[in-house]
Image: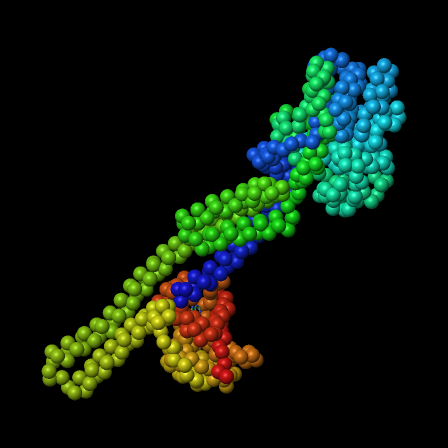
Length: 627
Ligand code: ADP
């Protein structure tokens, strides 16, 4: 029985845990999708970016920088075109593979420097110029024709900054404005270097057999009437600091031999001076803003080195979160104290390790869903266990109290037959000349009282043995109706004393199999309880019901004191008695029903109780029919 009770209350506790755990995963996923959550994930991404820098490589790009010194020499902003022209003229002899110019040349400017730049462009092989999005997104700020005519292509240099923290992590490989689509400057430079076409599919772009995973983010691609669309974002894998060489025009002026470094390289030319605020952005890799031209060079290296960072599949992330919360639940269901804490730490470790390991494999695994799922689930499961243990402690305390009460009652009850036995046996031995009839009466009294004692002891032992599963059950076949009638006969004397009528109807003709004696004990107990907990001049009904299937039902219904829901849920606990029962003045131990339930369940049956305080109770046995 003890086991049964625990299973009964534990069952709902486990169900609650089983519902709470996926709820933790759901909360984790939903929170991770809020703007705050996404921001946290960005920071985790930046952290991984810095803690797992890519191994250095031989860069194929180089920056021709218009830096502070250059501007100091040429003047700002008027000197930019002259500086650029000088720089391009100096590196021409080294024959760079491509020259991508990240300067917007959309205005005529002063004639002198513009003519100089035009002249330099005319001698530049594979020139790629750039266009930026107009502030309202309605079109492009493009190079004027005198420059445009020398360019093999125009690339766009719009920076895709994060909506939340304005950090440049991704680059739109394509952009549509004013019904015109432009490829990113870096991509345009790459395809020019390889003389290749760009092949498009909804999930990727392919250039010179390099597949760039970058899906179309919205339907804008199909609907060219849209002005603006952040399509095909590619994460930039920023190179370690200083990996991409940068040589300024001022340096070239001072040491023309430096031009050799540009040989065969893809050159990104642009302004890097810090005081030109217009084109500098924060990146995950640097603590100071990075010049746009450097960002394009980094994006180019990402493509050239195939260092693409792809998103983890949402299904995998979901599965991971579910695995974490299941783990948290299992830990607190199965592992004892310290082991559970160690396992919980390991689980937290796993939630942190997976994003890091994935990043090392170029997969961007969102950090927050797993972290939140694991954290919430562990906290919930630990609290669940704490409550369960506390409840068990309270219950154990209550059981102990009840046990002590029952022991007092039992010892008290035992005293009565013992006193009778003692008195009678003393009388017999003391008065030798006792009349025969009197002696016989005393001997009978001793006999019946010791039998009563034996029965009492037997009952208590049965509970323990049944609980421990040591009681052997006989397997015999017997008719239910006869069993009920015998119990009724035995209970009738008690019922008569309270003028309670026992009414039997519709007993099923079926046989049962099992231990007849135990089953009789169960039915007899229910009957005597019905009588015990009913006022005088009421009626107890015993009736059967065919359950059609392989089961029969036997109900015992009284018009007694009844019980409320909470009490009903506890009456099968050992030693439990309701307040109303205590106050009724009827003696009891609170053991009977625990034995009844044990017997019934061991016979593969079940017991149901319906009751209402002051109205009465109905106990229904659902029993297996013998085949
Ligand atoms: P006991 O009758 O010795 O107290 P039981 O285990 O048979 O112990 O019953 C446990 C408790 O369930 C009773 O003390 C009583 O509070 C309640 N109970 C059992 N049967 C009835 C009934 N027919 N009507 C009202 N209460 C009942």
